[in-house]
Amino acid sequence: MIRREAGFTLAELMITMVIFVFVIAAASQVFVGLITQFKQQSKIAETNIEGIVGLDIMRRDIENAGYGLPWVLPTAWATSPCTGYQEAVVVAETPWVDRDFNDGPPDNPARGTDSAGACNPPGAIRSGDGACTTPATCPAGSDVLVIKATNVAQNDASQKWTYVNTTSQVKEWDIPGETERLGIGDRVIVISLGNTTPTLRTLVLNGGSFTATYARNGTYLDASPDTLSAGFAPADTTDTRVVYGVAGAPAAAGTPLRMPFNRADYYVRTPAAPNMPTRCATGTGILYKATVNQADGGLTELPLLDCVADMQVYYRLDTSVPPDGTIDSEPNSIALLTAQNIREQVREIRVYILAHEGQRDRSYTFSNFTGASTCATCVRVGQSAVLGRDFDLATITDYLNYRWKVYTIVVQPKNLR
Image 1 (tube, rainbow, N blue to C red):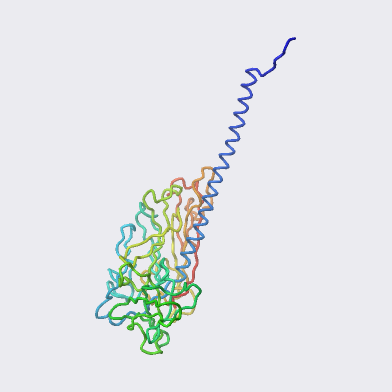
Image 2: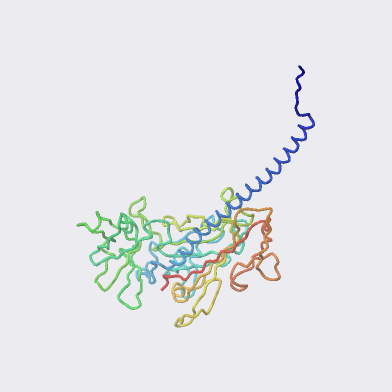
């Protein structure tokens, strides 16, 4: 009997393998494309989340500008100027001089009727128009925005307040878990609202110091109520005194506050590698919120949004005397206004931030240019040519392969008046 054996020839196997390789190659291209798009969309989603969270922090701080600030400084400081009051110092990380935004020592500049180097009431908002002048460390021409209030710091004490009576006892808030109650050793300030109309909001001193220490005694409403030092108590019931938390208890007991408020600086800075994300276009930076430390006057940075190319800030002012509720001016700087000018005139703050979503995408070409007709590669960072500037994206490497977006924040501060 003859057995027949069948199979594939070498030519058939070769043809099959070639076809199989082409099929795998095609499938691989589809798979790589899917992975690339997934990565791109993930980065875009990450950017959007950053924008929602980070920019909401900024919006909240602008809305709270002026919260807890004294409007009048103690008369005792006229003979011993600003005893114990020291604001920001020069910080190496920023290319501008942080002291330029000070209202008190050291080296605060003159503003209107406020003298340089003197002790002046703190302005709720300080602006730095085009403060960035060194492209190597920050996008050139980008603005700086400074917010002063007791509640812009990143600590629990700064989010709390109460009031003190004539016997130095403070109101203990009846909140489940006592989350609104100030803690043992928290450092606070006391503001006297006085008995006049309008109220003066005068900073209270005790023995020459504006730092009060909260004494938390036992549980809520027990036999030993919470107190402050007797010198911070009002003389009679016509003088309402509000207690604002500023900072938690320091490591060394009795350490005074540096400033009778907290300060948050917002700016765009390009950090050195590896702190700058590699997905960001060359020439962009990170939007930071930097709080001034009560310990040494330096900055503690909190990154809010990556890949930022520009930030522009504009103000809407009612300059009528008396104010009539009508917007009379929309400048890009209020650097020369006194604290009182700011309270009386500022009605709205607008912040425009240019950043790109996700990472570079070679298959994408940006085309949404919105600048002046004479600048074909510009994007307008602002609401108009006057209230904004045309940013030339051509100054950024491979700018066409990024998805650019202008974020807009419009806020009416609630604590200026």
